[in-house]
Amino acid sequence: MPNPGPLDALRARLQAELSPRLISHAVEWGNPRVMTEALRSLQRDLGGDGGRPPTDDLLKSSLQKFFKTQQVASFTELKYVCHGVTVPAGKDQWRLIDKPVLFNELLHLVSGYDAQPRQFRRCYQGLLTGYFGFDRYATAGSDAVGNWQHLRSYLNDHLLPTRKAAKARGTVPDWLQTLHDHKNLLTDDPCSRYAKGLSRGDATELKDICSGLGIEGSSWVLQDALMGYVRVVCAFTDTKFLSELTRLLDLIDGRGEITLPAALAIQATALVVIRYCTCASQPEHAGLRDTCIHWIGNPWINRTAWDAHVNHEPTRQMVNGWLKRRLIKDFFELLAQDGSADLRRLNYWLKWEPKITDMWFVLGTNARDNHSAPFMELRKRMSGRDRVLNDSNHQNNAFVMRIGQLLIIEFGVTGNACYVFAASEFRTSLDRRIFTIAELKQKALATRLSHMSYWEGRFDYELRRLLQSVPLSKGELLAGYPVSPRPALVTLPTLPTQALRENTAPAPMVNQKSERQHVPQSELNSVFTLCASHGIEWEDNRPNAGALWILIPDRNTRVGFAAVLDRHGFRYKEGKGFWLKGED
Image (cartoon, rainbow, N blue to C red):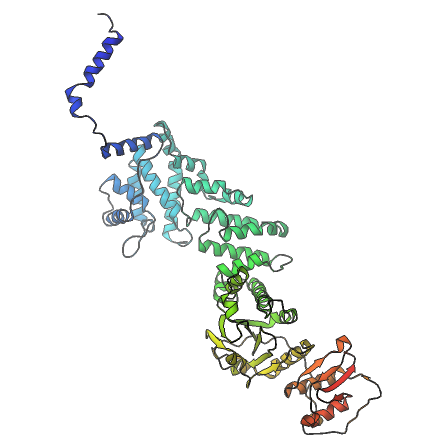
């Protein structure tokens, strides 16, 4: 019989396609079931597994059934249990990985599918999800860690056979190929590879495995890689570490390509700031300071957090000093009445910064309502110690300092004196939110220090005198803050003898032959002490070739004291007081 020609072959095919049996079973256009099957077929052809992770309800339901029976009703249930191996379930939030018997039974059931590569691969993928999702640090020392390590070995042992079986079918899923390329993830050293890349500024590999394997931001993988990177940089020499510091802070603060979980950002911040503290030089680093405040908190307000997360007192003190100096600068640079820096007061209080143990900032209307970037950053730094000032002058602000047993208040608007209190005598709780100007000044209780002329020396003398004369028991604030450590004090002279008492007038011993007089500093200190004890102000203009003035406009109101000044060679000018030119 001759071979059929092309026309005969075409005729035979048409007859077959027009068979009544085929027509009755023809595909219905638009049938969603058919489209779904086609999509699954396409996914399988392209290397996908054609399945989705189970919903939370299905997953937990399958886990609870397995917990009760140690069996599964279907392959689908087994796959769900694999996905939930590290997921808390039930009222007690138990996890399968915490239960050695259940965990080993699960692996036994999965191994039963060795001869069915596609089904085994789906279970393997579920177990891998649990492996990456396990919180290995929170459960250190528990049975779960041993089971997790067993899971790692199981996944590692079956990686090559699983990939080989997939390749034999013609397609290797993308996730499986990614895992094969990064099989270090299933070893005792899973992430140093990525830490080294990050230290070179290359996050490509880490991003690839996170996207390719569906690794969440909370996974230990990210934690290991990034903490490894931080440790690598912290092990650098000072010069190289400092050159990498900006990039470290960008990573911690979420300005890079990868965002850290909060717990990891706190750990990284602690490592970096401790390393900075060990550098040969530790100048204030504004970026590191602000990162520390954001993730750990104000070092004097949140002492507990610093002890818990950093636990390195020299580091806390370093950042504490940075923040205090920055806040002092904020007040005298940004909150001055005319917007220009009050450099004299700024430099003066910066000198006292090591003795300042707490600060509060009582802001007027203008400072609170200013939405410019500098003021928004200022208020952020003051968070927790910012208060509200109700004053008719909307430009005014108050800076409250704690030094030892003293409370000291400076105001932003010029023309205001500095007010000093024994802390226990300040009648308003600093826990309050709103203050009036009168509630801050409390004139009847305060020692008032004027900023007249060359006031810095008088402030030094008076503050040191008060720190010695005010008992430590006077250091309790109304809000119940503890007494702060007493600052280092200078030795001050004793008060003058009976001849210096206010109503005693010893015979004057005035030598007025020369305008310039040499009076020993010890005797001048006695004069200053007496001035301070009686609220008498003085001005020392001698550094500028001027005179030392004791401001007593009417000598008849201080007869005894006037006689002592006469004795020391002071001259008197009606309406102003006593003056002396001499060595400063």
